Structure formats: structure tokens, C-alpha cells
Image (cartoon, rainbow, N blue to C red; front, side, top):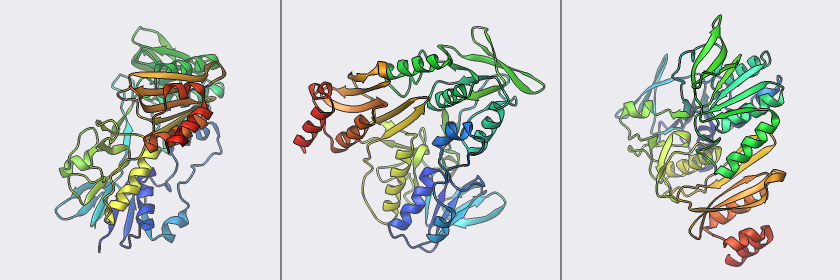
Length: 408
């Protein structure tokens, strides 16, 4: 391939795609393009260790020498303005077009905007990039009151971090419980109680109608019930929007993300898509999903590289996720869609328990709080397509391991 492969996006998916192309023996040019002027870095620490440590630096995904040493042409600070599919080239802002034989779109997602008065005030921040984390770190060091809009992973991670640093923190969530879209009620209720015990105020079933400011900087959030919450910093964590605009303008199929097949190919086979932006038919649930996780991003990127060099494997990775919220390490494996029952095992009062989700007799997913062994065994069981009996789950780890070993 004379023009080689171009990868748009320098998150976990984009960097893994570039690395995997070389690992798979791809010997054509590999260009990695990103809009940020940073070396690619890990995103998860931004909501935790990074914002509480004034000296913290981004944790690089790969050292600078990795790119040059593997003949990966990394080009930061470039914005793609269009895709010419007929001519197989990328249009760039302020730079000459780039030709490609294969294109990988790892364009990720962006925070959903807050459609209320005052959303444009200084001190109203969403977290997606290291520049956002630096701003949160700077602003939080000089404020007393923080309001977090959204009770998802990112919002709660930040809420716990800033409360531990001594800030007055209020979380406002529109749904009737925290983490309502991502975990089972027992997990969400447990997280709520632990955060409340830390001193985080939590308002569920509540929205913010407007933000007020003084001298252009946010000073308060006013709830739908009319309560005025003092705030010198407002964190907006109300979800994300997939970055599909380039694909859509080029005529690629789009539906809650860029549509891909089981080999990560878009509706134009020479163009692939991976990571948060990719929407696909999930092998386990049979439904269309778009997963936002490091695991999904890296596994899809590895498969896309194999596809480019001629592989025909179908994507079948078991999804897993994690979140660190205060003293709770949440780990999730599998997808709960279709579950009709669950078992809770462990010691919720000791901040250590797991929830096993079943559809009939089939194990679909496990959600754990500070029980990493349950999570790791769950990844093995689900990866092997093994479903333990409910009795084995209730009897504990030894019984589960024995049942799994016997089935193998």
C-alpha cells in the first residue's frame, strides 16, 4: 500500500491501532493524526489523581521514542476538515491533503453541552481532555463550593476527589438514582451512601434550570425546585456525543455512532472505525451498542489492524469497565441488557460485594465493588461462555473455581 494507513484520533483506540498495525506486520506508511498538541495520554486518571495533584503530569500511552522507533508518523495539532472517499484523501485545516489506502476513524466523543442559561460562564467545565483537567485543578484549588451536574462515572469520580480535598460538593442527577444507566440499583445505592458518608450532598430526580454568575464567573446553580446552590466551579457530566461529523459528511453510515461490521469496517470497506465512536451489533446481546471504555477501544483497534492486513476475525471481546470513586473500585464485566434476575454476594457493609446478573440460567454480567478476584474470574467465565449455577455463586469463590475447572 503506497499511501498506507491514516488513523484519525490519538486516544486509546487510535494509538493502539497504530501499534497493532506494526505488530501485525503492516509495512506501509502509518500516520497518526490528532488535534491536541500533547503526546497521547491515559484519560482515566484525569478525573482522579491528576486533578488532586498540582505536580501531576499526563501519563503517556507510549513514550515519544515509540512512535519514531516503529515508523509511526505522529502529527499533533492537525484538524481534519473532510474525507474525500473517491480520491482517498483527507482534507486538513491549514495543511495539504493527505492520501490514504486505509483510513481508521478513532474520533471518540465529546461532552454533551448543557442547554441552559449560564452554561457559557467561566468556571463551568466538562472533562474530556487534559486541558480540561488542568482547568479543573486550577479552579478547584481556589474555590469552596462545587456543583457536579450528572451522577455518572466521571461526575462521581470528580465529586469524590474534590470532596476528599475539602471542597463542599453537591451532585445533581436528573434520574432517580446515581449511575442509573450503567450499574444495578444495589451498586448505585451503595455508591450513594458512601459518598453521602463522605459529606457529598446528592440530589436525585433534580435538574438545574440555570446558572448564575458574577463578573462573568459562575456563582450558583439554581435547581428546578428553585434552590440556589453556591458554586464557584460547576462540573458538567451529562453524557457524551459521538464525533460522527466527518463520517456523516463523507456519506458513511451513521447511527448513534459510525456503523461498523464485525471486522470494524464502515459502509466503505477501506475505512474502519474503532473506540467510543463505533456502533456495532453486539455478539452477546444481539443489539446495537456503542461502548465507551478503554478495553473496547483497544480490543477493537487490535482487530481493525488485523482486518487491514487481511484478517477475517469477528469482534467477540467480552466488555469490561472500571471506575474508582473514593474508596470504591467498581469493576464490571459483561452487559446486563436482558438480565431478569441477580444475586448479591459479599459484604456490602464492609464495602466489598458483587452482583451477578442472569438471564434465565445464563450469566450475563458481574458488577463488583472492591472484589477484584470476582471480576477476574468473571472475565474468564464469560470469555469461555461458562455460566455457573446460582448455588455455586452463593457458595463462593472456591465453588465457582471448581465448577469452572470441571466445565473446562
